[in-house]
Amino acid sequence: MQNITVSGLNLDIRWKEKKKNFKLIENSMKLIKTDLILLPEMFPTGFYMKPEEVADRNSETLEWMKKFAKEKNCAVAGSASIMEGENFYNRFYFVEPNGNYHQYDKRHLFSFSGEDQTYSAGKERIVVNYKGWRILLQVCYDLRFPVFARNNDDYDAILYVANWPEVRIDAWKTLLKARAIENLAYVFGLNRIGTDGNNLHYPESSYCYAPDGTLVSTTENNIVSAEFNAEKLLKFREKFRFLNDRDSFEII
Image (spheres, rainbow, N blue to C red):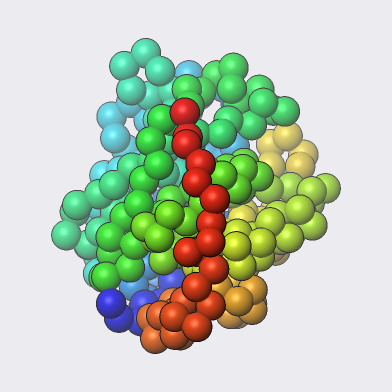
């Protein structure tokens, strides 16, 4: 297990314009050297509830992510609207520089916006092993459901990618910090910025918290950077063995 750096892009997503968003990301991250590039929820299109118009049918986003990860020699992670069979998924891809990838389909669909009427919910919790770190993949609304993210001593960090609007931004920040403290894990929450096609505004609001709840991220030129420090994590967990006292839950 080694220290790794994570660099998230505060992206002002171009509404329903995949190629423009891909290019914007490439240009924004051109000079960045990191272990992991994190991109927002539905970064190719924005949080759009008519997936039949925008969903990937030929792995466009995944293929771009593989190419980008290879060029940057780092992992690239973020979610996109995907069609598989006759179903649509809000799918979080984690792509390694060698082309290997992992995928998590968002479990908690945002019924307030009708996401549950157009997308299918995922059924599995996914933990990725990358450079010795066990990383739980989560998407936006998942943040409100702590049982699903409960650390069974099976992960070291959580990645949340989101389109979380300004009107509820205090909940976003509060819950990110809570997930870090209660799970003794690093938590990196990446939100989009700007205004989307539904006229919802998203302020700069991406953060990374250490297991003790300390804010450890910095932001410059829309790049949010943080280090996952292995020694600090292990020492903190050794001193405060709170996970040993956790309740048992069964996810149905």
